Length: 93
Image 1: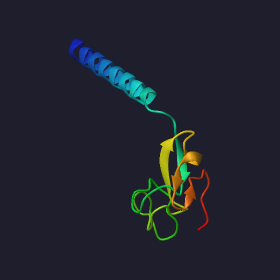
Image 2: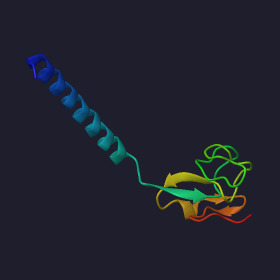
Image 3: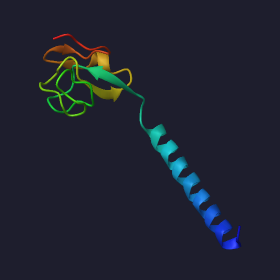
Image 4: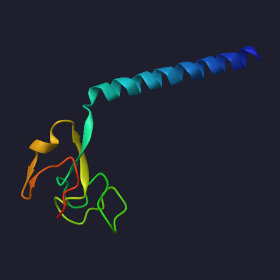
């Protein structure tokens, strides 16, 4: 390997290491997340909105029981909506 190629490889490896370290610190700043069913507004779910939908942003109604939203871990069950509290499992409507 030529000196030029070795220098380029070292530079790329260093840049990758710095980028990965930045991702780890960004994750540390965010609380752990959990899926909370029944708290998303129409079209604002993160995923799982039942038959006839594909995923994120496809819930058909506010607080749809089979649609979930990511929330900080430990907060789901205390979230209240006009239809009741959030749930860690799908809610049958």
